[in-house]
Image (cartoon, rainbow, N blue to C red; front, side, top):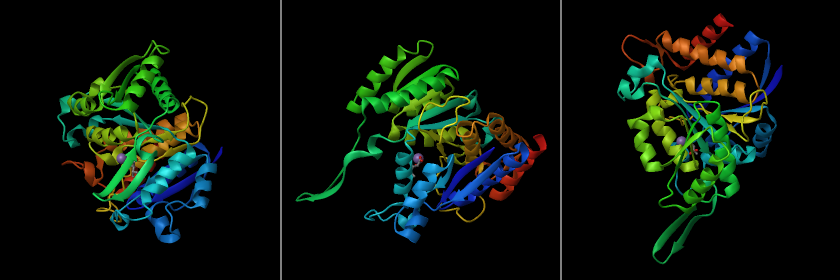
Length: 366
Ligand code: IPM
Ligand code: MN
């Protein structure tokens, strides 16, 4: 089969790790007889430098017409002036909104091989296998009004958290469906003791729960969830929450996996149904890591595992997706480590070498 993939590496380590994701996709193509046409575009700071905007209409069009988008990361100190008119992050937020990818799946797995690389105790990490479903196109990130204005008392800044019932319902439905395909446990996370958005969220979740009697639902306040995530993470199966809470909780959850560099994500415009590919947006959850950009030491596994999600959800290539995930697990079992997950006795690899090892593992098995 033939597919068109939009490849948007962005800034910092984004292009380096994305190149390894592309390398792995091309290897999957060779092993399984598919053709992936990669179409490259600039987004974020690099696009601001070249075109004055974080996302050009051409790149928006490219992303909107491809079968899937593989994205790196955007941002960096160069564009961090708090008074700047354009920000690299705008490119990412516009893409998410343009593609309508409201459901952001962030699976968190603990590889037994990496338990010693985590700062947490092994007994806490035992049996951890959770999925954070983050609402991605609403809440504080998009609510109006927003901005700053000057008053006699000084500057005032406003951001608005806003959710409609429809926006809440559609992401919760994805959560219920995903829970069904896993261990049938859904934790809906909110701040219903303070926020109106969260009270509406809880009301909708309670109503939907009646439609999914086979799914065990609990409601948890986001501050409690933050604590439980490091205290007893194995209690979670699917966590579903609004945009900002999901952003924060997934960085925290990354600590369970030993490194941010390992975690992939899939952003989808609908409920994923096996055998029914939908256009999606795929990115590692980490940022641009400006301190290590260009050094060839970034961990590409987040991007590589994002290609596995891309194969599964947007191209319907289930076996191919599983082969990428197996190759990653195998390479980790062989003791291959980028510096972020390096422990004594393991082999230190750079970004490209790690990609090469995953490709080798993939081709050996296929
Ligand atoms: C993420 C990032 C983005 C977000 C930034 C770069 C806008 O932190 O994907 O988690 O907050 O969504
Ligand atoms: Mn984030």
